[in-house]
Length: 357
Ligand SMILES: Nc1ncnc2c1ncn2[C@@H]1O[C@H](COP(=O)(O)OP(=O)(O)OP(=O)(O)O)[C@@H](O)[C@H]1O
Ligand SMILES: CC(C)(CO)[C@@H](O)C(=O)[O-]
Ligand code: BAL
Image (cartoon, rainbow, N blue to C red):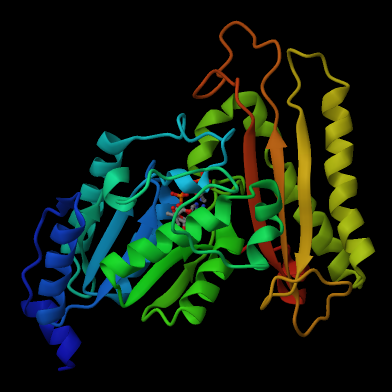
């Protein structure tokens, strides 16, 4: 019998995870796992857990003996005018979801188990200086350029500096064999992979597919802010990708044809919404559409069938106007702008069947 399997069968699986708030406690657990030759898979999150997070935890439990999850809303990745203070914090619900996963994993001897949930304070994560969201703020930061300055980074200038910095801290603390990120935040996966490579971090970066709602909308912790009216229009980004798939399947390869297919869809839906009365419409702005190389994320002038492309984009759903009596306006009453991102792999196979991975 393979050693790994034997270890799992005889191993005692605790029914509760340790909730850890300090670095020494986490290191103590990690050292015990190392001495017991248990592999650790790590899933960093900002909480408000949904099926996208749970899928990453399931994948980590398939590939490791122990799963560590972090829940930490990292201030340095939010710009000064972004939604740090209102970001959903839902620990009671998150705990129930994690406990349900523990029950699910404990019935299957082939799976690892959630061993620790790391919920540090900001003082714990940023011990020597208060974290800054200012572009020229002082502190110890990891910067990955030029990758961090484009696409998401162009709209959110401090975002990837904050993500790389907190991921470096978390990876130094947890030292997992494997770390898990979602494809939904595709540029983040490129930034973290580059950081792991350039700083010789001893961990394997694994990427889980984007988990979607039944109609295709990518799950996101921020979707709770949309409300009914904006939720119905939010699918426009994915629908614009489907237009690109169609023209690609019909033979278009040049950037301008592919890009225009997405933009035409976005602009036509934008016009339709603008024509509606204020009490009915959901306005949005297009932030960017990118057609990029699958290995470097550099913009492409032409997509080849052999390599395909990463098609990604972001839109900003603007605040709800004239909310109606009894209208479900989402968390925060529809007052805040909600930025949505999504991406798909553009290749001939998926384009022909209209498959959205
Ligand atoms: N729909 C999804 N499918 C797969 N992975 C996801 C999905 N949504 C988020 N993730 C991944 O979960 C991890 C934690 O993400 P995070 O806690 O920021 O949630 P989020 O839903 O992306 O939040 P937000 O969209 O508001 O930034 C990241 O690696 C992220 O890519
Ligand atoms: C990776 C991460 C947990 C870092 O704060 C965050 O950017 C996220 O949840 O995607
Ligand atoms: N999911 C990425 C974290 C953020 O948008 O801040």
